[in-house]
Length: 417
Image (tube, rainbow, N blue to C red; front, side):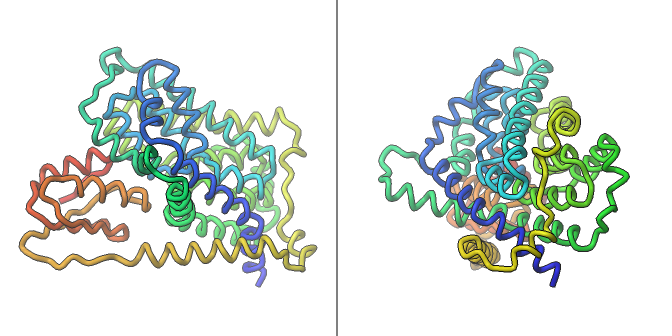
């Protein structure tokens, strides 16, 4: 019962802010033209690095969702520097996670988190730019079509003739269906892990590490970098670790490194941008996370980062607050709907023209949509069914397999035979 109470308490605390964040994310998706973003993210020099960071910070894309977009930018002529800046900034935070951070961790974390993402991404982008030769930094336009298609997952359809009502409906669909489906599973995982830590880990378990923040940060990095956790799903985990004795700076390390870095991202970046750029990308995240973590622990007032004890809050709030409860019910309903929708797959009747491909690198509906779009654009393809759970793409039509593989790779994924 205590586990359930902890889970429900954190859900009620977060759900109103998460729903608001999803709405803002949907409005950004529907009303900001894709061509505008693509134009500002491409180019050379330090200005595109800063632009990429500023645009990436509020965007609600997880690390797997941002990869196809950033790779398409790179193939469309963006420098490694601006692409890396976008890759570092975007998954660390977003309008949805900023709102949720405020709800559980307070305003100081909600303000410092996007600032840390911005500074880290600019530093990483500039550092990658220093490793580039002028020739490698020259823009090309060979893959403009691929970039346009992949970026559609970021900013939606063109806005020129769309009516406000249509845009609003698309904003609601993206925010409360597509985005919930993209990060919902990781949000649930994060809440469950946080509840387990809150209930079953002894209060003084991390007391020794709490007195040695640098060792605690290194330990968190060892755990956070290999795993995958979305920006919103990392929030309840950070809260539960702080309640068990870890410092606020250590919690920030988890909030930064967990969403921004994982083995899949590093491998794909190394393939597309080179091993040197991938190492700079990873080093920037590590240095930035530890640097801002130490800043919080040693330079800022501790009471800015005080968090409420979940056990005490539950004990003193036995009554049910109507509005957060309604928001939680809505959020659970959306999570249930998108889970069912995600596991309902259309079936193609197999014929002699049907081929199956194993897609590597898909982790969320953003990835699924990007792969489906890239395959659908191949000449001769008449029908596509991409199964996110199995990674199998069933393709109907008389098409060239090599063209299909090239199209999938242009979208930032790979095909395994």
